[in-house]
Length: 366
Image (cartoon, rainbow, N blue to C red):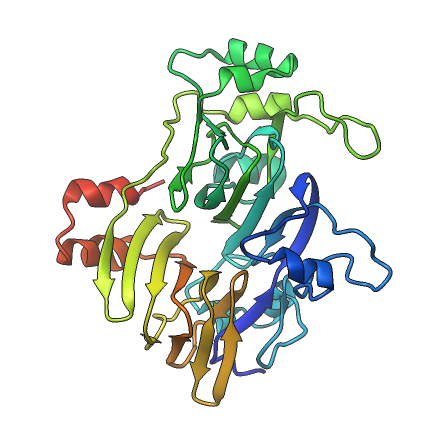
């Protein structure tokens, strides 16, 4: 049995999408992709490959993401979880999959108008977990838009008619996001991402998606993609609020600053600005992950160090020994994990002077 006591570098599982893009800036520089220095797991890496595929998603903690360091190097995340669940996630996690699904998304066109079911509905109809998710906007064009929810008073009949006529974007509420904005998307919330976005997403480990409208778009074989209108309409919460532009609650830390971005019972997201050495003494017996958004440096462990850079995700196992991040340039990382809402968010925020209203604006029970 391997000893999982250091942070483990995980290579993404890149996925081509019709709405994806060839340019994966700022996370994966275009000159590196063009010159062949592609990240591990990137498709089309052979010498014969003449074009860069249109990547829509990089699954950072997907089943087929592959470890690049430590005693499980070369193994997929799903395999490691099945063989060593307690060593990876701790004894308190009782799920049958890794608890968190994180992705980068790169958009050049509208994603379908869609909705995710809650846990109860997904268990009954899909034998899966439901999907509550959150987005952290990394970069966006000035005119980029996101559809989120519907205006008050919209009826299910009006939404159905718009979807059947491929004009759901006319019915949905839309907004223009800004970089570093956080959006919380509970199950049942109608949504669609527009073109010109680079974002980080974390959710329950589920990819159950009901597509209500794909705007009469055809796939690369000239066929329309399937819709799931009945189940999509059944699970859409018309009253769901647009939980966007969440309060930015940030406090100084010895290494720079920490922002408590959003938390619910499924996941918590923190944004770490690391300007000097950041020490991580323990991880409270649970698995955590660190995704690098900006900057470069070293992950230092007792036996040595490994370099970190944008686009990487590091899995910190439940039994990880103390380690530290040593930035070579000012760095920004997303830290995410399954939280204890009181211990990880409410109490530390209250102790730093955050008001009850501020705390409630980023901590959700659902």
